[in-house]
Length: 240
Length: 297
Image (cartoon, rainbow over all chains, first blue to last red; front, side, top):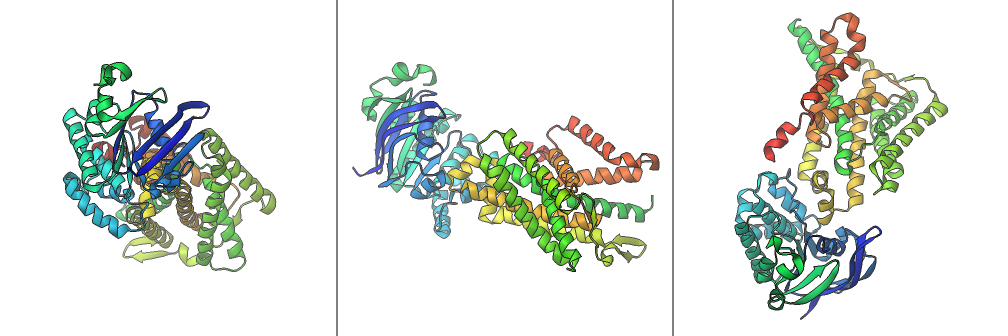
């Protein structure tokens, strides 16, 4: 399969503290790859390093054939890698529409973005209904949809999702994951999904990596990883 | 009090409030994006003032000079950004605050030593100090000009912040700078834009302030800085609408005290205004603007 993201020997952290120790991973075009791990395993740090919020101290990151290691966040989003940050982080005082306009900020083809917006409104009907409402008035699940839709409007080829299930009721979590799977199936979007909620993530992922203490301790297809009984062996079963 | 006097004081409070609101907006726009107060903010007005002083002394019309005053304000705002804020990006907030204090002190000292420590008068065209007689109402022309300019500036700012993409990014950055960058907005350019807006607002307010006082002095930036600081605290830090509300509230308190207090106490207006502000903050520590926000959250 054609590789979209290829990370080799990535070392990153905050100041003198190294969080990620020589991580290597690859993501093929059209894949959904899950990165699983407990709190503090370094999942968010990995995403931060990928989108340029922190500068890796060593390693190589190739995205879509370009070396993007050390690029700024604004350069990376223009290359087509967009992060849906942990905790959604929508602009709560801006309207739904304004959040989406911010999502399309990096694009030159704003007219095309507007057309796309109409298409996404079919996928996210609730956002269409509430387009003029302040985003802070949406429910948690709706905010997660907004965060995903906002990221999609940057027209990414790779979508990074940081804990999309966080703080959502189980029923809503199912809906959000269903939506993520639909996105891949309908648009061919490549997705990296960082999750603590192992069962949900493995249900839609093709492959998965298990991250603990800044190192990958296992990788394989979702079926293989599911057999490892992660909740008990790696992550502690408290957030099943 | 007669109706005429009431209307006159109302216009007075509105025009003072217009200046405070513009001043507060200029300080708040940088605070909202960076989370840092620019303590050299008053010097933007000082430099705009001295620029006007030299041009008017050289024979230029006051209002033409005012345009150059605003340009000087923008340049000063950008200079402060370049000297005090940009080299310290990522440094602790205290470092940046002290750096902006340092810039403020240096500018004051330079003006004192190079030009003069004494205030200098700027002749304001005499028609500006006139009044329009409307029946039994006497409307001061400067107050009307001030209100009109402030309204135009605020409407333009509101429009730009809502309908232009960079303006939208400023509002987004005020809420979440990191995510705004993730959407592709370059951090450096956003900060620059905030300082340009801050300079424009301070410049316009400064011109109106100078038209009111008719003089410039090295320390003239202190009162505008203090008033805008109080206004944004009153309005809820980092909130642009709050800055406007805070500016008008401050002016209304000030004018009301001047009108209502017995003559013997009037010299203490500034102190009593601050007491009133303290009382308000005691009951509403978040300032006024939280009223509108809490309903949303």
